[in-house]
Image (cartoon, rainbow, N blue to C red; front, side):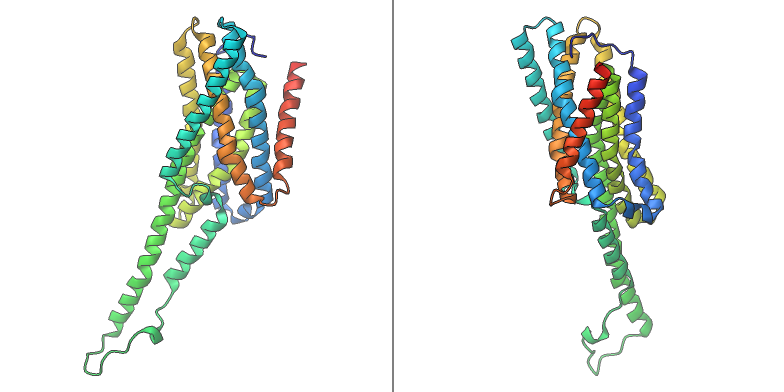
Length: 327
């Protein structure tokens, strides 16, 4: 599994797959141009898609990528026991790194998971619109004293308009800030996904292609997460779409980071670098599933009608593809 030498021959394909996976955020973001598309993305569909992606990533991390890491250390001259220990160490190091990245994400956007529910954005939009169109109930206003001069009608209307406008403006600002924070948060955790797809493609194009599809599936609702609040806050579909698109472009940046490390390592350190990279990337992918995919899938499917089944289906598809390409 991990005994073959690995080269940069598939660099072009790797960058292409990573870019395609990253740009899939645009598919979710495109929903702002047609509201009926949002309704098609029902919660069971999203839950099944996220569970399927999680199954693919878990299987390929434990079975394929960990094996590649172990094999690379063996090729580099380590004994079986030492190679297995180093691969395991790198795996948990990757999990720790992703956990730290996730902590940074939640500092930037504490409600990152909640932002993925388009219904919350709809509610905020309705609140904002209702606030903007509300009128002050005259029965709740204390009548002025008899000797006090009555305020002019235009002054009353101006005061009511300002009172209604400020909450609306504040809500829109909060929505826009939520969207921008979500874009930054998604961009941060897309970085290791790009690295994982790139390294996986270099090792085995079949693995890379399957990974790109799995990551692309769960990038679709993330694009929706970014685009909806920005659209509702700015009334600009294009701004929401472009910010979501930008959040997905961090995946090619992650791929470039991996390419730079491998390119600069030279032939002498090649297998050692691959061993470390594969181990770290495998750990990162496992934590992406644990921290992101499965919790979000369970939120959309709290009674587990499809999540567990879709996770197993993802594992089965990944296993079948590996078996077919090994034949």
